[in-house]
Amino acid sequence: MSSEPREYLIRKGGYYYRPNCSGYTTSKFEAGRYTKAEAEREAAVEPWHMSAIHQDDVEDDPVSSRIRMDTARIEALEAENAELRNKLSGCQWYWPEDDTSSEMCAGCPQEVVQNAYDWNHPEKPYVIAVARGGVIEVTYCAALPPAEDADSDDEFWIEAETEEAAQAMLDAEIARRAREGGNADG
Image 1 (tube, rainbow, N blue to C red):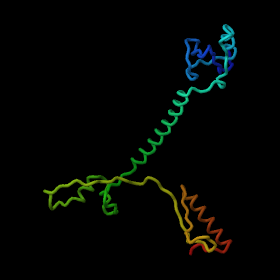
Image 2 (cartoon, rainbow, N blue to C red):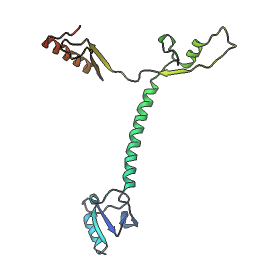
Image 3 (cartoon, rainbow, N blue to C red):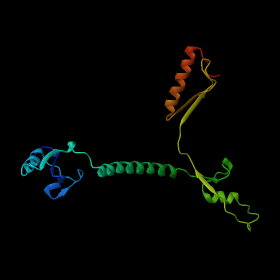
Image 4 (tube, rainbow, N blue to C red):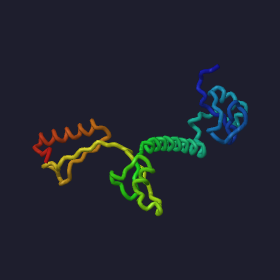
């Protein structure tokens, strides 16, 4: 048994041998892989129209290349879908669609309906739209008034994925202002 890599294809005319020299294909993706010695030995049988060719010297099939790209894209979308489903499962706040005030928030749709109905007139039931939401993302933010040396009157804004990163940016700006004589707190 050889430890030589199996990276060669056997081409016969416009076709490639399938694995184990069993049939032919026009697809690089479906072609068998052979050691250099195996491929050269087989190609020597009919050298006028057979050759041993390294897999890297054969262009990828448009279809199989597309399949690999589509497969990678599908896997990425499935991972994104799973992440979004996970976020959605954490969204457990409900409210009337037209009223997002905190007083109208409830833990389930039934509570929203019960809170919204006029129970003094049960003969006039109606349908209401119940929205669902929750915390989708948390970012850490801070702001400082414009520095004296600022080019605009915009506040200094910080937004980061971690509290530590936001605090480091805030501390750095306060230190910069102290060194340069800018104001840190207005």
